[in-house]
Image (tube, rainbow, N blue to C red):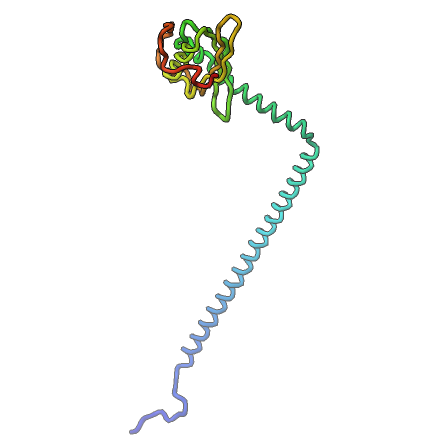
Length: 209
């Protein structure tokens, strides 16, 4: 007995095809829903961000206007005096942290017996503590010895004689300046300088005439 399919179109399972098409339709619908939800969510976040940016810009503009009004009410002379007062206050704070005891201790243990101390004045130059020492002596050589001792004690660096003034009694006032590093640690003993002794350097050679 002869068997065969003589139809013009081959037979296929219509239910399977319909199920496949239904699955694809459901997947596309779910994808569309997710895409729409993501778009709406991003749009909402973007709207919130733009609102924050606008609020920040408005606040910044308000602060700039307020700053301009404040600057307009400030007298330049008053501002300059305020800056100067602040600088003086900072100088006072620096002086409070400065140890006068440590400085005078190192001077006491290094100054030769034939030198008299006239004055000591610290100051700040670009964050560096500079000390000016004025001494009186009959000769220049002991002043050079004094400066050598101060640097050897670790108390000063770049110590120089910047000015010499003759006094009516025949003595000399010598002004010395240098960077103050602290009281130092060397226990240098002050002793008189013999008249014929040759110091390691002369105060006159460090900036004097």
